[in-house]
Every structure is written in structure tokens, then in C-alpha cells.
Image (tube, rainbow, N blue to C red; front, side, top):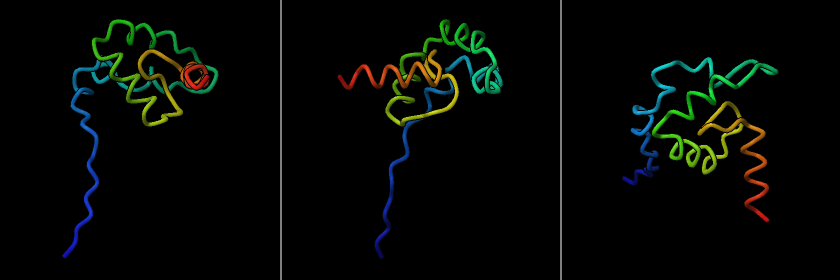
Length: 82
């Protein structure tokens, strides 16, 4: 019997992230709402770089990840392709 296994990413880093302690409301605001509080929390987070790398690698399109909004991550992706 053949079982195809797909390795799931190691997400243990999320347990150390400050967003895990504050809740997701700041990081997934309603359209048009401010992301200032989320960015402030991310700025203090020791896992920020890992979080941003995860979002960029997995092409996450919604929410604040690693201190960057959706638009900022898209801009970073476009800049890095040049």
C-alpha cells in the first residue's frame, strides 16, 4: 500500500509570536480599517522576520504578517522580482 505524505510546515514559531497572545482581530482588520496596532505589535515581536518569510513563501494575501500589510507584501514581491 502506497501512502503519499505531504510534509506540513513547522509552525512552532507561531507559539512565540506576539500575535498569538493578542488575538487575530488586529491582524485581520475589516477593509479600510487601520493596521497601525498590528504593525506596532509586530515591531515588538521577536518572530517578525520568520513570520514575514512564511507569508512571502506561502503567498499569503490577507492580513498583517511580519509587520507588513497585504499591499506592502505585494510591493515587496514586485520589487524583489526586478
